[in-house]
Amino acid sequence: MKEARGIQYQDRREAPIGVFDSGVGGLTVVREILRQLPAEGITYFGDTARVPYGSKSRETIVRYSRQIIRFLMTRGVKAIVVACNTVSAYALEELRPEVEVPIIGVVKPGAKMAASVTRNGKIGVIGTEGTIGSGIYTSFLRELRPDIQVLGKACPLFVPLAEEGWLEGEVPMLVAKSYLTKLRHSGIDTLILGCTHYPLLRPAIAEVMGPEVTLVNPAYETAVSLRSLLQEQRLDKQGAEEGKAPLCEFFVSDAAEWFNRFAGRILPTGIANTRQIPIEEY
Amino acid sequence: MKEARGIQYQDRREAPIGVFDSGVGGLTVVREILRQLPAEGITYFGDTARVPYGSKSRETIVRYSRQIIRFLMTRGVKAIVVACNTVSAYALEELRPEVEVPIIGVVKPGAKMAASVTRNGKIGVIGTEGTIGSGIYTSFLRELRPDIQVLGKACPLFVPLAEEGWLEGEVPMLVAKSYLTKLRHSGIDTLILGCTHYPLLRPAIAEVMGPEVTLVNPAYETAVSLRSLLQEQRLDKQGAEEGKAPLCEFFVSDAAEWFNRFAGRILPTGIANTRQIPIEEY
Image 1 (cartoon, rainbow over the protein chains, first blue to last red):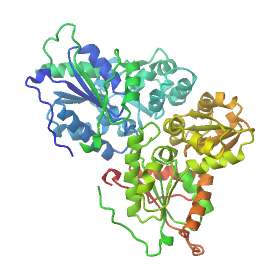
Image 2: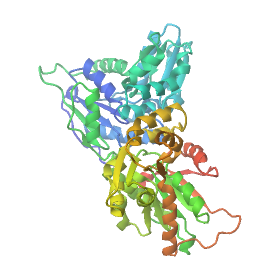
Image 3: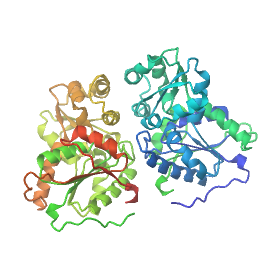
Image 4: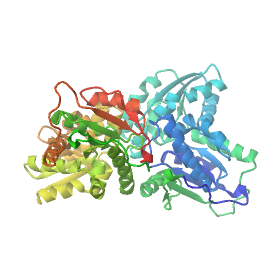
């Protein structure tokens, strides 16, 4: 393991926010943070060499996440956003005591939002096998409202579909129908997009679910929670210089060029300076 | 890295054959070896923690393959079969000088077979982005017959479809149509299934391509080549004890249980004793 020496900021408020995901999905969370906290810098890590996480065991996901957090700490981040539902489900609570900066996931904010928008108390959750199998959305939702009914459905093909860029047309529609038709007729009025890739397939998901079901994107509420957290802990950046965009840095474990191309579809501005790092050494 | 100490066989002919793949796809090669060389034992490694390889860079694939070969050598294997087209394409020639036992891939045997069955000299190849991008099938085919025309097409969704067990029905048919319709009308008379997962989707691929196109499964020809190689080098096992099945051992880098379930669909006999090992330490 590399020694955790690295960048240090004299004024911690100036430090970037660390964001990580198993691959490109977490960029939908970065997009929300850029919208809602435009002054903040971001250091993103996407584990493109070891994606997907959704079918991996808890033990492996904890080990990978620990390496990524060590790497982000060498970049001097002031807070960490786990922009991956599977990691939030499997590893966040175990890792929290080990991390010296505030750390938040996407599951709790997503659950909070869903509990507040449902009218009939019936909520659907879609995600990877890991996230659905963990039952974590159900736990958080029941903490908020014990009478809530939760229906979960793993949709493993959504991630490769999104990463292949197959976001619209016949194939995503048919895959969405195969996964979601039963859920559509179950009486839920709210559906949590419990994987950061899924907002990319929103058109197909929305068409299958129909207009009476509210789709919840946890990325939005995560950015809201992040803002509160930074303010509470006096870590929010004080006044961005006008006309000067904050620094966003991107790191991956493999294939930086492909990542740049994909990021261009999600983020408002293209990126070109993604660097590949040997994450296994952290 | 772990020291490469391990099992040693006094009679090298008794040692198992090492077979590896990025995940479960290589089991289609194991199936062929079991059919054609029923006396031989097999030690299989599936890199289920780091699958898929198809979208990873050459450098990463070489590094991963080196770790796997080191692990197989600790198991005392007498020969190694690279049951993965992407590794065969990207890493085999670079690794060959480093390996003390004979090593063969699936690409050369597959190309040989396709060159011998084509009537009009027009051959299609489907595989991962890595395999197609490498142009390796084209190189081998042209070495065999310089006038051969090769048309390649990457089909990235086939691997997750196969691993999801979605082998028949509307979705695989539609995905196959999306990928293959152009190839079907291109005039090829032979199609190489250039990824070890693809034979699992053979029904859908065959239906789209029609009866006039011969589908070549490199796994078959790889087992033929392996038999010749073992005989030439006097490594073939001498006479199996009657009624006693040879030992097949399975190792993975993650989620052994899921692997066992999946293997049951491919191999003639179910397996239950798959072990998970920390491949990064090799």
